[in-house]
Image (cartoon, rainbow, N blue to C red):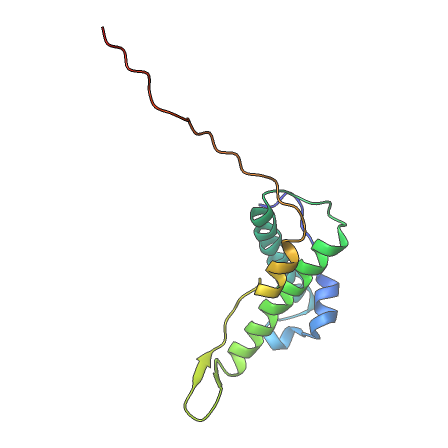
Length: 130
């Protein structure tokens, strides 16, 4: 569970134009609950990637979280409509459900990560010759 949840369900819903029926949900509350669940998961990914938490109102991190969840919504909608995309006459590919695209990861890397420290021992063990 992340320390903070970044992003806003209302902003994601507005950004994507998604409606409950697009994801086979019963009502607006079910849609908001699903988006909140995905924001929590993406927030956990962000904190794990940067090894730290950010203030909940951090505009840049919230924007990344919103766009990552928008990617999940778009993938879910495409998989319901047509799970395979025709690229040309012979090539088809499956729709990928990827929240963090390379572009979002590049943007996320502009925010400093907390260092991960490892304890290592230089040299070798002392050998007692008794």
